[in-house]
Length: 82
Image 1 (tube, rainbow, N blue to C red):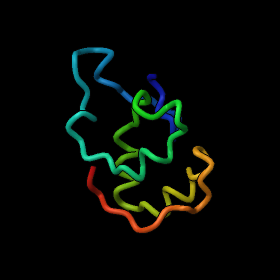
Image 2: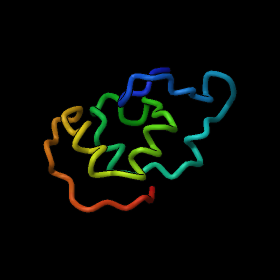
Image 3: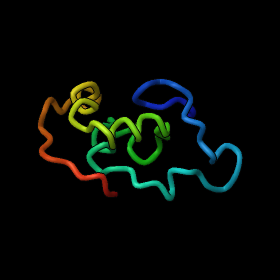
Image 4: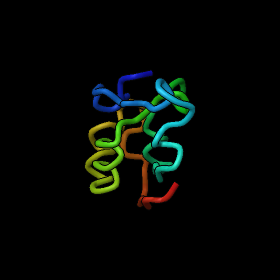
């Protein structure tokens, strides 16, 4: 997938150009990944801008994208760890 599942912008996935991607070593919060639909989990490449937006304002980010996974406000507090 080349489009970010959240913002639909270019995800710039490194897998299309090499054997790894920046996201393999980035701390992407589990609760952010849980916002993805089940079929996108583990296969969708999230853009750096969305990861940074989530890390800076997780509650606002979740409110915007909770409907993707059909989980309307079921998330508690969050940490920025993988």
